[in-house]
Amino acid sequence: MTEKFTRYDTAEYLKTDEDIAAYFDAVLEENDPQLAVQALGTIARAKGMSQIAQETGLARESLYRALSDTGNPEFATVFKVIRALGLQLHASLPPIQYNVAG
Image (cartoon, rainbow, N blue to C red):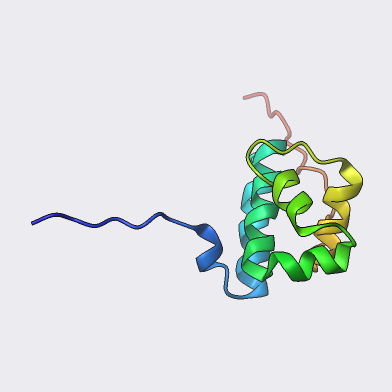
């Protein structure tokens, strides 16, 4: 008996806007720019790369390349994709930690 495996694709599990926001938040916590770019590519595929290309004014093929694991898009491209996906970036400071001598 042989086992069949299918390739795991995160895009298949991003069904709702809440799923997408939670996924992107988790990726951003890793502080890895390349991982964030790849995640945007995954989210774009989940939403439909053609739709995202149309909304950003960029060619679909260019988006696939820019948001791939070897892509290195300009920040302007990343920002356009984030907006087209309906995501927002927010800045926050970590909570202040106090050292209490004891």
